[in-house]
Amino acid sequence: MVMKITIGYAGAVLLFLSANLSGDVLTRSKPSYETVQIGDQTWMTKNLDIGTFRNGDLIPQAKSNEEWERAGRAQSPAWCYYKNDTAIGKKYGRMYNWYALTDPRGVVPEGWHLPVLDEWIAFEKLVDGKPDGFLFQCSLKQGKAGFCGLPGGYRSKDGNFTGIEEFTYLSGGTAEEILDSDKNKQTMIWGRGLHAVQRSHMRCGLRKDFGLYVRCIKDK
Image (cartoon, rainbow, N blue to C red; front, side, top):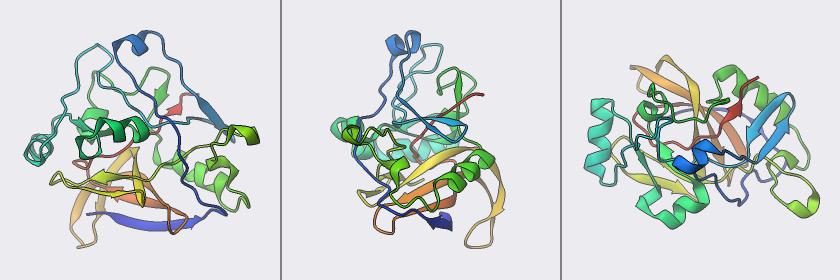
């Protein structure tokens, strides 16, 4: 289940096409990331697409619904492409559960981290009310490299895929106990949702066993 709190509306469609960061053992040793400066924050312009921990261990891939659900129940690391389609993965990147992102072996490249709640809030204040939504544009001919949010959907705790080309959920680095929509206590991730049709970005309470995309922010 997902809690959504609408924060505001950008002035233009937030979601544009871009390539995605792909990673393996080789790119771990020689990283090169496209970035965008938003206020005093430096963000990667592409979703994370890395299949190994920092020490070279493979992150387990969960293809079937049963594998994904089992990883969530066991609180074990897992990643997937949307509908297990590598072509889709090249466009949108990989989705990870919380247990992969917080594994002590590390998934996020050194010098970067998952954006915590305060960083997401600061980001929202910077992008709200921009008349041309330029922070989200990817057009090189305009001379602007933007955040480039992509509507890649997400994966539910049961392993079902939904939302591609409509919305996406991005993970965050803050998790805390909150009340879900049924008034039950859940430890949720404070992430962000981007919606193509509504042209909105939302603060979302997301389950740890969801498959979520990752956008990294640089350490200061």
